[in-house]
Length: 136
Image 1: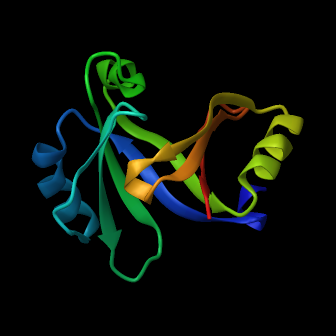
Image 2 (image 1 turned 135 degrees about the vertical axis):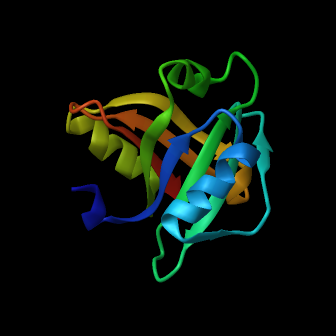
């Protein structure tokens, strides 16, 4: 349902260390990396993006930025596939629509450094899927 009004932007994976994980992800996905890592204190995470040849969908590697990071607990359970991110127009309207469908907001719209301070919002679906909505 989300894809009808938004495009899949990236798939997020939680890793312990981006620099250590990047080689394996590049090899297994045939993706490229521009060497950039963002530290985002607002999101309490370090992030890097891999660009998959022939696809507009990126892979995001996410590592905790400190012990209090929301992804630190996920990493303690093994890390791995974490979320799907959709780029959407009208972020507030999309969040309201997702809430009306019974999804829970776990992070209200907040600027994200890796996206040039465009806002992101976090929701969990009834199926326990974590969704990030990225402001277009």
